[in-house]
Length: 227
Image (cartoon, rainbow, N blue to C red):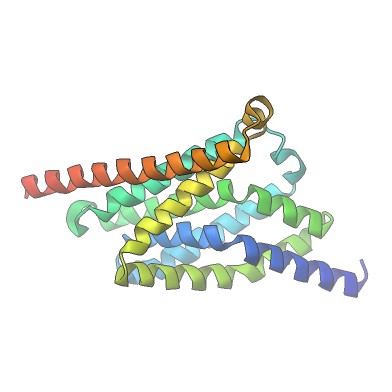
């Protein structure tokens, strides 16, 4: 591959990953927010790094990803569960769960959410790279510092402005709705209109916020009664 074409393709991959990495940075920030401050950076680096390694491996099979029925549906449900868990954790006292369990739980959430939310990203990168493995590694590798910086910034802003946590959960609700509606199996059989798409997004956003806040309130009450 000529050097100029290689560099142009590499630049395209970096742009694709940066444009589509906002949701990933958000879910990482939400997942590590419950960690002690000294563990946050390590959690972000470990989670983002592991997710990128798995994304590189999955890109090899990218052409088949969007044709698999129920893949996006399962991914959307997983994102909803993570959003729900974030709201429950917000209401949990710091001593409510041992830090090591919470740390590895955050790593799992980051990795699982990043992969399920990155299907379109993986396909776009696979197309831009024309199957060149080193271009894929280069493009995803360059994006890591951006995701780490964005996640750190978002987690600090959430500490200062807790309302951003609920806004982030609402965004994840919309992401989950887009994934579910975009699942090949449901899309072919339901053929949802744009209006139905918006309604589904709205229902999921309200549901995850309401259920998560209610579960968090109950957990806070139980912890208070136990103390």
